[in-house]
Length: 547
Ligand code: ASP
Ligand code: MG
Image 1 (tube, rainbow, N blue to C red):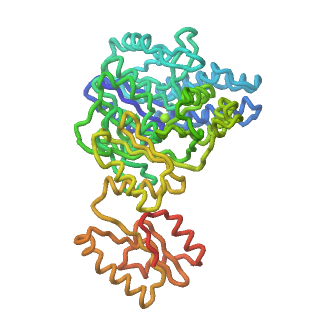
Image 2: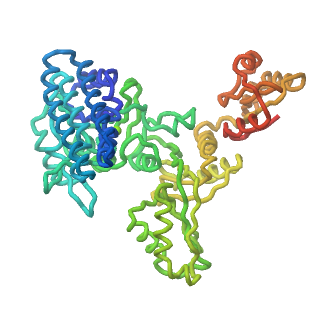
Image 3: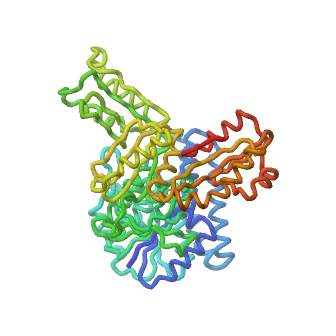
């Protein structure tokens, strides 16, 4: 038996759903299919609720839009058939319930937690009804009956032991195709509807796979798998075909939102392999996440956090002052602020913690309050906040065993003039993190990626200003020598910018020198000194040379 999960984009369009139907119906074994809400629906549900709570009648437009989305989907999938009639009745019951919930919030001007969860749950309840009708022979199983949560200090957590029992019970006789709404649950004590947190459908699928000892778990999404770096920033990033749970965890925590991180926990001890697949590109094999990987490589991938801050607490000498760290973390914990990176110098004169930009002010106040008496007596300094930073994390299976990773990282960054503000090697040693200025993130990721994944050539990026007799001849020479330099010197010259006195042409993918004059006339834009300078800086390329 296997468990498949299809995310919001996979089920959010007729094209996606057609693919889901084909994938589901071609299975050779029993399968449980966990589905998300149609793409964007959970977001609209929550925004509608928040509008209603502010007394803004815009909640009615959110409601109308949600109704329209589901009506249209049913029309496209079922036309006016009897299937449409069957499912439409159930869909309307839920939509009516949603309407009453919204009107209630609007009247009261608050969203009680219970009501908020009921509203949020609608997306999966609706989508699973429609998908169960679409897939031939599928039976719908309602997660509200068997995914159970408990409240612990105001947080909704999975009640694992009860859930495991109930899942086994629910699916004891299941064969063929079962459809299950992801994300939603009920409280073990009150029976109220709860959720597993945003993105929680992955978690539902993993919980079910673990409880039933499934042969595999497939997470179907809209990307080809885990990538060696964010493909929006690093153009030549590639798919990671195999990765361990520990590495996947590091990548997820550091911004690669391929899966919801908690979803890694249930299947991990059972050693159930998790496949990340693309619904829109099913023939690509994707990424498999396993307990241990067979491939030997030093670095698996890069992850990054685009906007973060460092908070540093220091004293002329903290040597021997006991409990500073514990008080610092206590102060942050009491305000629910999470820390994702810690560095401390061994002389103990300072400790820095990485915190997301939205929580930094709250963090600074909390820490300064905690150490108020030490700060006022001068034993400690007020905390220092550095903003507009990014973290780049290098993730690999055994960074502690492999020599030279840190050296390579430092070299790559220093060669393109990027300063490192803090650096941490996690004790898991699957991760080395560097904190740098936010403006350098693009360049840093590209240069680190090149040095670990494409180190065949050293690359230079050239901007050539002036294409008359001298400049023109230079470009001819570069064009003639390019192959030779690559072969004999492992040096790759990319001309990424050309300008004359009136026009400029910038292209970070490189300009083909056999046709640059034609491209200049067709695509060149008018040039002035400041614009050219800003254009070049904006491309943020490593190893740049201006001629
Ligand atoms: N629909 C929920 C969300 O958008 C859960 C999920 O898609 O995994 O957060
Ligand atoms: Mg989702």
